[in-house]
Image (cartoon, rainbow, N blue to C red):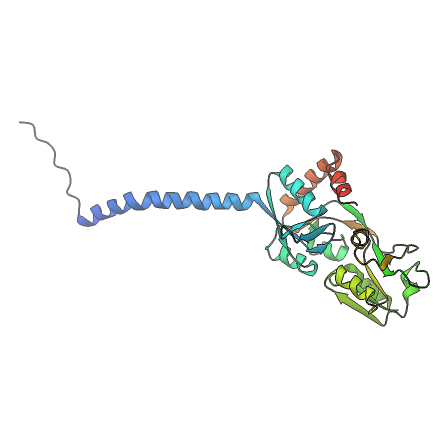
Length: 268
């Protein structure tokens, strides 16, 4: 007679642990996969910030309730070239940099001038579009405006969060400089006679005027820009990898004509 070796007797606790492993390990493994998938998905999505009032660069399309514009099309094209899905979040202009530095967004894609002061806080891409200020006045304005000195002693306006506010204050020739959340609000006050002139982004104000908004306003024709610069996209300073990817794709899309075509499509 052949004797079969007896298997060691398992304690109740050992049997219970084995059963738990059978049920828990697949669940834990599945959870790990979900977490890994979520991490990858987060890494593949680029969160861009755009303003609702920077026509035609970024603005809110009231029909779709989404942010659209030239800089939105640009960041979408860049994202596609870099292999990212892009979502665009609405933000007021003066909240863009805080949103970036706090990690709420990954990139600023708006009509933001590259300045030394801003470059101390964020990392700018290579130049995207040349940019300068304009002066909006009523069509029946008497007199010529060649420089901001020609408006000395007048109450004027500027958009909060822009470089123009600080530069206008530094001139010390205006009794009052009113700040506005949007250029449209500023232009409305010029139209209503509450301020004599408004200083802001010439391409944005010019586009709004070309669309028939504020028919009683115009850009001062003889004005010579004094604060010309370039706009660029911006990322967090520590995100050097994204900045390198961004500049590589930007150079590629400039070379193949995509960037120029986007801005031409928006009348820029």
